Image (cartoon, rainbow, N blue to C red; front, side, top):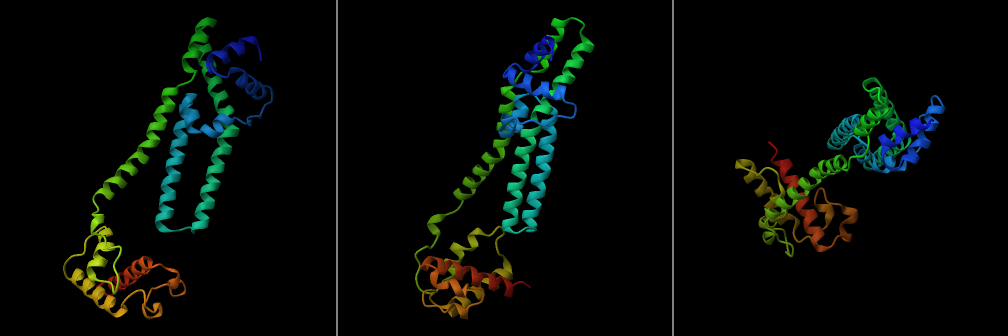
Length: 264
């Protein structure tokens, strides 16, 4: 690589020029050699792309990630994978992204440099003008990287806000945590129905409430309850539950059964 090439690289890269000189020299001298490791690209990924003004790869990466997230949400919603398979897939995709960015980052950056270099030569015959053009298209952009950070943080901030907002709407003082004896309809309403997305109405509400009351009386005190006498209770693990746990699980069991009975 000539001194002139070094000057162009320095104008384009600006920061950490010696590193990219060495990496791009190997790409130029070895046809078909486009794989080399870049730690910053590996760890920074889309932030590194934005910082180095690699906007075309950045856009493609965003499209790929958005597609992946959409598919992931669909798979999770339909429960197409087990918990272990979901975790394994998540780790695989994460490691794949680290590998792709780490091994191809230098090549992507080199391709943009060569394109800018050709454009500079086609537009300007004067060498100083070429270097100015290359410098204008290269360099780094902390602002672009900051924009990416903000855009990615927006969903997180919104999720936190929405969670706090929803929590603020719940009257926790109305919850019954220390009840004893058989379950009551008021306890079930406080600790279960408040979390429903859609409120019960009309005849179905009356039916569910009636079934809950009947089944709660029949079950009796959760502390002395034989779990085998109530459907949907975890018989093998019942004795391991604390008093509050037994009341919560029994609430879920009798309300679930009530919804089944009152489905029509």
